[in-house]
Image 1 (spheres, one colour):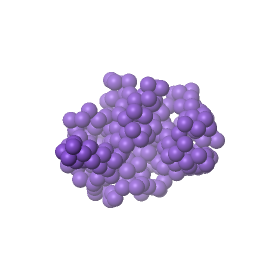
Image 2 (cartoon, helix red, strand yellow):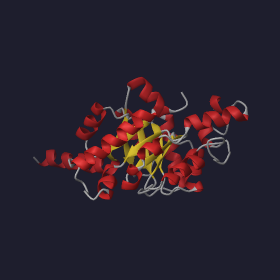
Image 3 (cartoon, one colour):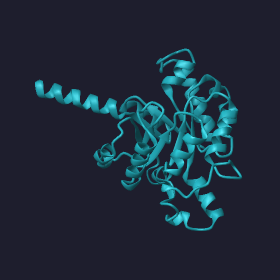
Length: 257
């Protein structure tokens, strides 16, 4: 299997991950035995340079955890750095116009779908991976299959065009950002509001109709369990900082009790 996330979905039916903000590969080693299926290396909000991102991608891949990268901006450089270094997928935030979603495909896929720049980089072990060792046409096709384009739906504008967006060839799925989506809808954090629930259902149904993945952020494990029960393909539960600080607070509480 070219892509660890797709392999997980095929074997387990769904996937559980989290967002990373810590830059050291040791964190990946520490959580490797947790059963985590994927991580989102968050270069939008996290303190990552290309080298630290690369180290985390490499460590995750070696440990069998699917590395996704949320890039900071929809640019050639951001996309190339993530994909050339072996990200299983790229999550693109803050998109509003349909053309921005088309641009994501243009930057992230090779011709004829897009115009990604060619190199046999670290993500293919510089061409030594079995899937990368064939002719150039095979390499381009396999690279497109490995590199998932997963733009976020987290704006009212994107929601308005979600049916058109999910049918763009080359978009592999949608990652829902509940907080920013609720803010964009004018109901910040009101996740029980019917307008928000209707928005989630619309995105989910659009993905299902188009045969695309639907992923979502979950603020708590309970939310994550509910989303999986509702049929979402993958949930990213919390952030490493959130989980660590909560666990440490609980440790201190128990020690002092």
